[in-house]
Image (cartoon, protein in one colour):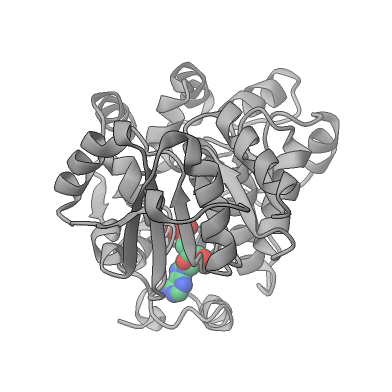
Length: 380
Ligand code: AMP
């Protein structure tokens, strides 16, 4: 089914073609016509499924059609869990609306940076992408009003609950006008989230995409069996010997992410760590340098890696395994996206072996093992 069959305007169809979106992704095929019809949506989808454009395109279309007031009030509110996702989603709004005949101003607001520039920029904003805490702060200083919101989007709602935003979200729901359209996107559905669905969504159209399964076959997976204390040298050996140009490395803690990045830098491999304890500027810069190829290694915790959208990531390395098999699949799904194959490498210490067996069983795939202890790591 082509984009032209989804009910979008010619201007938007032209814009998606310029983005090289040849065909709508499954979530877009299902969600776009339903959103245009004014239905509520429950979208079960992950990053990489094309979920952002599935709500951005119909929202832009509705605004061109004149939904809501013309008084430059906030008409669409997108709540997101992290600053990175806020920036990313607002960039999609900006990119896809740049050529539209009727201009729409969108803005990302998030905590961790000074509030004043955001207050100034809020003027004339019609689409606001926000993390819940900062939005409440802005409301409390009367910098923003939600009274004209016609469309509410909750993006990565499961993550928002995991990060403890339940109370803030409740407060925000209470400040929104009753008569509005609700679009909720989440990778998983917990009991908490089901309660929110019940209170928030009216006869939602349920859109579900099993994105990870499709990707797994595109990913070459390897595991190196290695003594814990040799993980650092082995990592440097892999990056150097395979001439890796871009790799996202996962660690289990902020402290370890910093330590791994530091060691890589000390050994002549440019690396940045990205995690919740870094300043916002540091995080933006790390992401920007990584995306543009100025730095080839990004060392991340699971939280920060979520939502990082890079068109093609050739390598993912699990320096440490995640606790849940789902997170493992999510991590390796960062490579092999968009029909390109990628490689996922895990460093498995003796203590990790049992857990790695469980992960393979849950994933339904056997991962080829390499004896890392037999590799000569002298000089690394
Ligand atoms: P998302 O799941 O929203 O993070 O989107 C994942 C990536 O897919 C982004 O880089 C989008 O630009 C890209 N994308 C979204 N829709 C399409 C499409 N129909 N065709 C090709 N790429 C797309």
